[in-house]
Length: 361
Image (cartoon, rainbow, N blue to C red; front, side, top):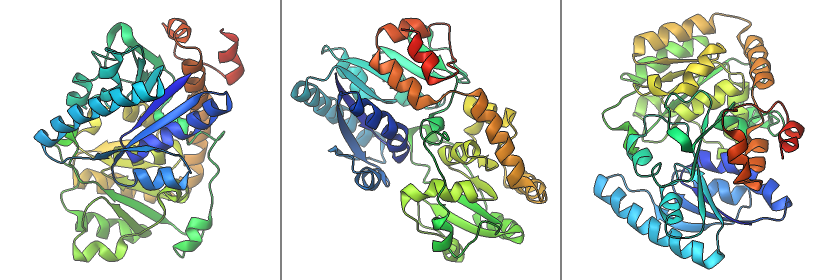
């Protein structure tokens, strides 16, 4: 089977990397096409994943419309060039569109309910839309729900083993309390009219009383915060999140990654209330959403005053992993056995283990 994977964001590289390698082991031919977004291309190179480049991300509305037209054209050419059978991606509008004029099928993954624009131009054309079971919207007959999160495709203990060497690079030890703070650019289409932290300096000053503050940022920081900014290889950020005492930030993906790793997280954004994954992680006591600096600081201090916070987070993570599925194993099974797998998944969300999922066929 020939499979085309769309990479539009650094998180997509992580989401698909183990799926790609496992499907290659099964003898499938996988082709990757990538948009130049943040560190996406760096991650692909670091993981030795070959790709074809689709271009850059535009920050304005008309530029994004032009990108869709160009992306559809390039995807059509890729489908013909490689005789693609299945096109797969996270909110992959290109693949969904081209599936309607070629024999290829479109399998779309998504976990972002409030991405209204990209969902509107993708969902009507896709053959299947796979969402976490906690996804708040009912997408109709195309929707397949599974009992997991995107982050469990690459941060599940089957795949992720933390490497403490990143701490040494930053002059830290496993016993040192430190807080990761992330600021985003707010340029995504679903970010229009939304906001995160109002007073970045005030937030950092409040947090540093409880440990070293390490900032990652998509944009330029004010001079007062530049000494806190860190530069680590993008593939090492998950190791850092694992060892962190707390994550506080505007990045929703990073917040759910931290929580999935057992690091308590506070996501500061007016979009957080729309996302089912955040509600589910809150049910495990691992993630909170906030729309104000004051509420964020209050919750952060409450958490940081607990001397057993890290141990408690790992206990919560163990429970989460026990109750969720290995998402990569699900993806491999689902795509490898498509379309029969779509029929089997109707009305189901859970596979207790890999062997159980394989026995269904």
